[in-house]
Length: 94
Image 1 (cartoon, rainbow, N blue to C red):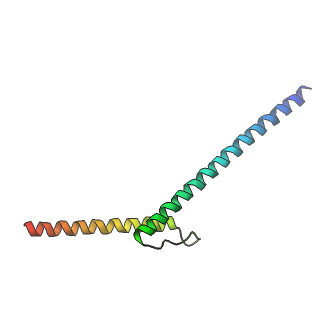
Image 2: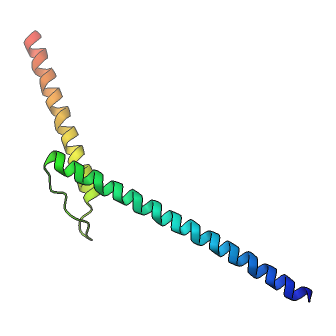
Image 3: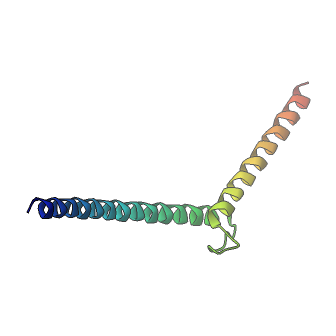
């Protein structure tokens, strides 16, 4: 019967679509997990390099944010040291 064939074809299309979406979701989760692993490694490297405790993931702490704060603070200190050095040099030559 044509109606049965149409229903079977619609079900086949829906199953294929569902499988495709499941594969896409699985791929997205793998990519997210890989990105999180790399962010964790980077945060740990920053922690070791700067000798700062960035802590563990919790509802009160995000080590990625803490690691970024550590780097930004170091960059700010470096800029200030550079400004002070340039100021001393201008006084010495002026």
